[in-house]
Image (cartoon, rainbow, N blue to C red; front, side, top):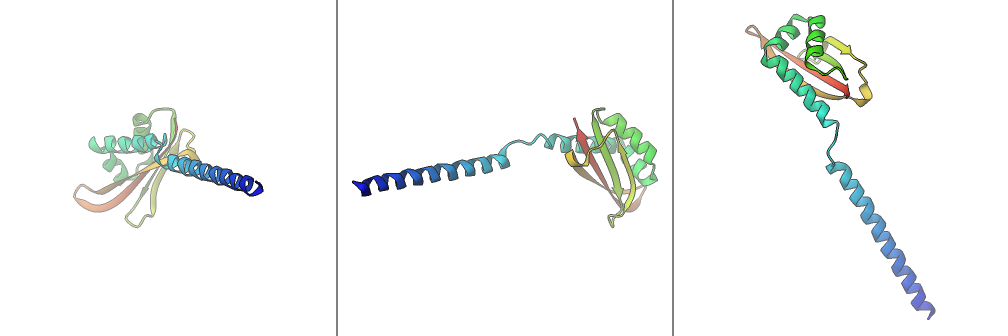
Length: 135
């Protein structure tokens, strides 16, 4: 009778262990597949840069190194509740210009990288990194 009780106790402990492992796997998988609210910040950054580029303003601003004009256009394109940092790098990833405004929070930001290949017939690569936070 004693052996039978031990077997049931071991059986119950094994079942509990399987349930705990199963739940931990389910929660780990859920972290990877759940939609992230932060992806909207990335989308907003890409849309803002693409909008400026489609109108022809982005290349003109970036290649003239005009930080004030860059800030004005970003303020016009992005909603007021979002903070941002826009940094332009050359082909060696050396910073050329940078603009930060509206209470940008580095730890809650998501970024988009936009590549420009030249302006007015000159080949000169520029990487425009727009990071957006808030919302």
